[in-house]
Length: 302
Length: 204
Image (cartoon, rainbow over all chains, first blue to last red):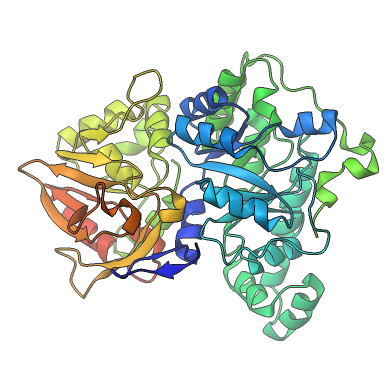
């Protein structure tokens, strides 16, 4: 199933509906869930979408092994249990996993560095798909390369499963700073900028002109508290993915609701203070510096 | 609050209004008309309650405040949602009851069924509007006071046998309340639907 026009002049799988879908998620929180029960808790708490997966990143880290696409049966059960959109992860470059997920009826695919990459040279060619893709990025070049491959939404990579927001902050600031830099360049300097960023010059021109990515920019990777989510909004994220941070904490329901509220009222410290009270234990968290070299997920993809 | 807020603000401004975002009850007091943006209806319904906006908005609507809802906003403005049951039996979306219509959520299918097409909208001059439908609802039943502004033909062959057919209702108006199943705010070169709403607000 690809972009196609039918007899009555309607077209599916267009840029407009793929990117537009992400526009509808703006200002919201997307939560990792591993069971239909968790999906319902997330929906009740006000999540705009859920990410269906077998193991949250914190467990992938602690258990090791090859992390793959989730069982389509488990994804189907989550799809049936909620009315909000359901996303699922495919391995970097694994276009057949992506086809399976599209066939299973997911609403968005995350081509994710949290899973073990399936191709070390190529990401998935995302244009032929009807289902839209979100991809991770650590800098502007990476973000624009994913967009040139057809990604309809970008998120910072952060460092998933650590409960440590430092890498997400780094990536958000990096992407935003590089966009600001482009906006002050002369038009004849954009060719060299495109070469440096290793992306098509048309995309560089568009970012230089508009000052923003042509798709929605979310953040992900290490967000554990309402204050983390609000800070990410303040540094330019249009919405937040929370992975292990919710269901690895002491009181998932309360934490999920609090993160939703803090994401909406990111500029109001009184609200954030109120919702941060009595949430119980946050997930334990890991120091990114002490991770072994091969455990830095953000370095997967290029 | 959530969803295509910035796009609606920009479209309203191009349509000649002075828009402002509303997240708190006190911010509602100063507006003459309210836009409920597209987003996720379940999420927006939850947020309206958590931020203590549900009652004030419902009250203003009952006093005749003009409103416009796109997509999820249409679901919230209606008075009946079909298939509206959370697993515990409670309604997933609480409606504002400003339009006498029964709305079916995600009626056209999942995201892979989302589509773009051209739609003629009554009251909007200058030819059809380019309409983007994203996991869109449709109106299945209308009360006597509701005017149908736009319909589309069966968009997707594999739902044709079930519920969609020629003349599926995708835009309605009742008094000063307007709703579309599609997202005119995403088409940044055409603000005719928003201009129509601004005129409705001025006339009210």
